[in-house]
Image 1 (cartoon, one colour):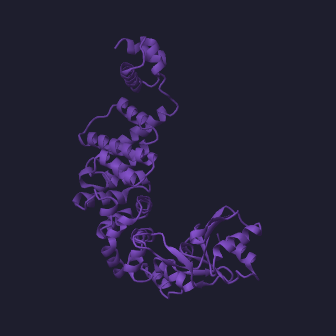
Image 2 (cartoon, rainbow, N blue to C red):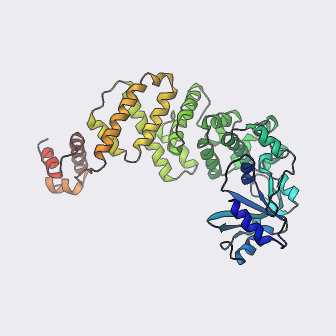
Image 3 (cartoon, rainbow, N blue to C red):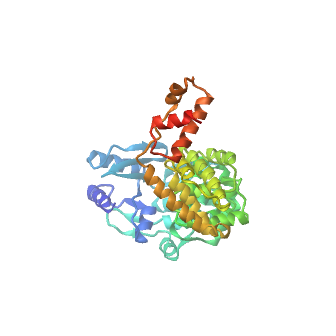
Length: 414
């Protein structure tokens, strides 16, 4: 992305945009922290400056045609495959219980003060490359690893309650702590999160769960009373504390971590929660399948059940695409819980057998379908066809090298 800054700097040299365009936010924060970021926002210190600069770059054949959002005076363009948002320096006016502000042109300082946290207020002058800290606090907070509101916490959270979840997300993404005054502001304003759309709550929850420290993110959501808004069905308890240990052991996969978080909730309510938060049908289906199969397999392991190869083939075949995720959930629990740890060796042996059987099945397909059943037994479509098809599968699970005729023949003798 550094080359993008150079391209824009060269394009605006000796124009009205020179020394008026600044990279702002996470890109500059990450640069100061020695990290690489591909998320770039540029603020332009003039009325409608973002739209004007985006149009200028397009006319210079440097970018794609801008997508303009007139209400917020913003424009989005693409340069060398990178999406960049341009906006004018602005001040904002929030109406009660709305996170959509009315905006007006403001100074660069007014623009900075309206932002959420000091760590996101650094500016990089596109023309000179100089990094500015207009609050006088941003560099110090980055150095000391602190998430701090840019102004009075009650004010910034009243303006946009989503910022409370963003504070938790930045804390766990960056391994920063939330300063005490900001934390008190979150606690005292937590109820206002109800005014934020479920989609926006979902996005922040997903980011928290996929952070390097999802367990601490969930803990902070409980601590600041945010969880009771996002997932009121969850209550902090000894069981939840144990689930946090499993979260710490889990891989960075959304469905795995969501299954762990919702482990003690029944499937009907899990579906209600995920639909309420507007997760996709694919995500909902995946979480439900993982939850159901994790529970069934772990119960059998804990009962010292001796899985046959046929049973494992059935688990693999009926969970095509999910089996690795199911094993991820199981592994997290069997590493994290004292109760499960006594069965950890059984799980490892089971995983080894599943991997071997997966390899055996990778080039094989169940050779019988409903049409075959109806022709063989002279049946019309109905429940009996489904029952016979299930019996045919169980024959195949015992010996997946059988062909269609061999399976149908064995089915006739049953």
